[in-house]
Structures are given as structure tokens and as C-alpha cells.
Length: 247
Image 1 (spheres, rainbow, N blue to C red):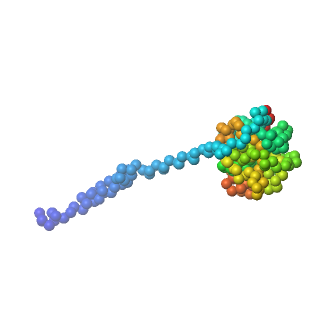
Image 2: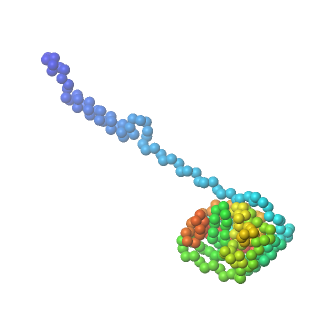
Image 3: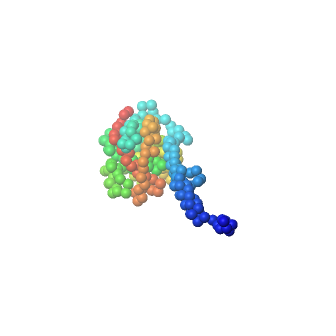
């Protein structure tokens, strides 16, 4: 045998070797390559939901009302987690006109079916002006017809502390009628000063903190043009299904 011809590579052997190499490579690719990973990595888990907002704590305590001070119970519902009673204890000794005005609306059934139309987180939850339902971005319903506005009682010694109830008004001092708000913070800047009139506090929340906690954590939708930046309309609406004087 010619030594030179014996050293020549066998063409058929080269073809078989190439085929075997390609086959092995394709099998490895089908199994996710040679790195040990089995397919596409799983997506990361979603981030945890933000912690629920908690109710505020008063920095100072307003003077206590009389032991037999009138109380109003607001029954609230949004159909998806907000359900129950919030009890307001009123202070007619320090805000007589405001308390009498509020009780007039309560005892006339005015607040039944109204909604809390403004939630400004860590500031206020406001209602008492609009009958539901209200839809963010929809047509703003007309305000309910009210009685005449009342004289502002912002000098009775009650401060806009956390979980107090006060009357909403326009920039005109004596303009409050039916709308009220619950303070969700110690909003002492709303109190009267030597330079500016304040907002009249006339009572406080004395029962129903769990219901209010659910309310401030309920779904809420921004509504530009109707509410301010950072404020929202509870959606579904938080409705006062019934307001009644219970003492």
C-alpha cells in the first residue's frame, strides 16, 4: 500500500463525523443548550401590594362634649368592603348653630343616599352634597337643594384634629349649608387664626374606626376638572345609606 494514500482522510468518515456533530448540537439546542437551564426563566413574582392606610391619631384632644351630647349614626356602604356604622358625637355647647343645622338635615332624611364625593388622602373625606351614583369623568350631578347657609362658628374652641367632623364651605365665611368633612389628619391649619377665618368643627368620630379604615382604603378614581390633584372619587361610591340621630 502506498504510505501516502494510507494517510489520506476518508471522505465518508468525515461526512459521518460532521453529521454526528450537527446532530448532537441540535439535540443540545432542543434541550436548552448545554448550560443546564430548562427553557425560558420564569417571570419574577409581582410586587406585594402597598400597605393599607391607617387612621390618624390626634395630636391634641378637643374639649369633651357633654355626657348626653347628641349623636348621629351614618350607615355606610360601597358594596365591596365598606359596610357599617360610623357614630358622630356632636358638641352643641361649642357649635350650637352648626349642630342644629346638621341635625335638621339628618332628621329630614337629607343625607340618605348621598355619597362621599371627595377623598383627599391623609387630608379629608367629604360628603353631604351629592346624591349618588357619581361616575368619575361623567356628568357632575347637581347639588341637592339645601337650606340657607349658616353663620360660621370657628371660634368655639374646637380644632380640626384627626377624626373630627367639620362643615365644608366656600371662600365666603358664612357659606356652609349641608356639606361636611371628616378630618383624616391633624389639619390645624384649617383653624381660625388672627389673620384668617377657619372651618367650623362641631363633633368627632366616636365609633366606627374599622369602617372608616375600609373607606380610606377603598378603590378611588381621579377626576380632573372636578377634584383637585391627588384627590379622587370613591368608586364604587361610598354611600350614606342612612343617617339618623341616635341620641
